[in-house]
Image (cartoon, rainbow, N blue to C red; front, side, top):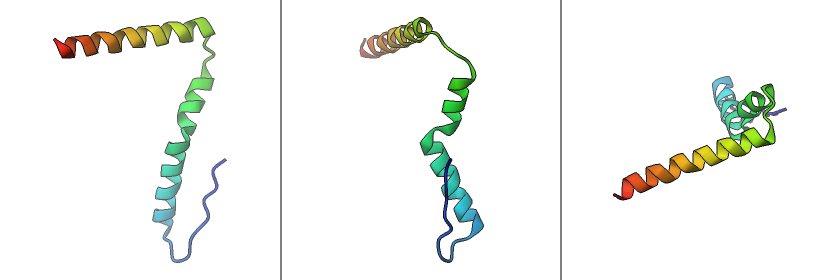
Length: 64
């Protein structure tokens, strides 16, 4: 859980902005999405391999 303490002479808008930034940096939303659906280790590896292929192909196309 994220805790934001109000600083002296700080507006609510500024506090909310700090909370949103902290929430984004903590990747709370990404973690919730990831935990929503279980992914088998073999599926994770396959996704990583496909991602690496895509990046490699993109890099090779960029050089030529």
